[in-house]
Length: 112
Image (cartoon, rainbow, N blue to C red; front, side, top):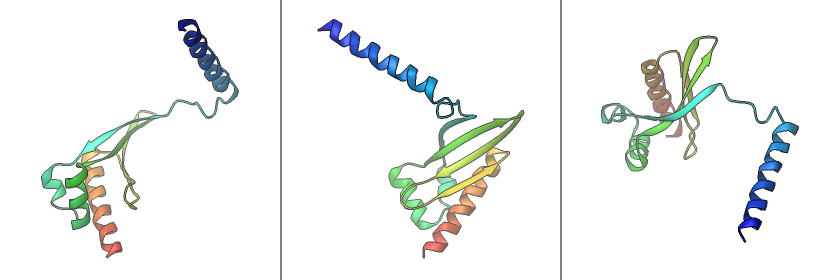
């Protein structure tokens, strides 16, 4: 029983290695670090009413990506849930948060 399990694991690993060797473009390393960004209650209170409800109910989170290109750091905040598609970029994190809040408020106004 243990030998069968080990054989299955080895076969899966060999298949993964073959796939990586056959498709190098699809397995390239990404040039960003992804994490969650949290908004404080003070920042959430500035958002439009639909976002206030969503952020309070599901947590005050969005996706933060930190890109590093040629020594220049750039932040991207993404919110792709519940029919909203908000993506903003900036060189400084506080500016990115401010732009995200502005974009979220604009998205709320468009839905009304």
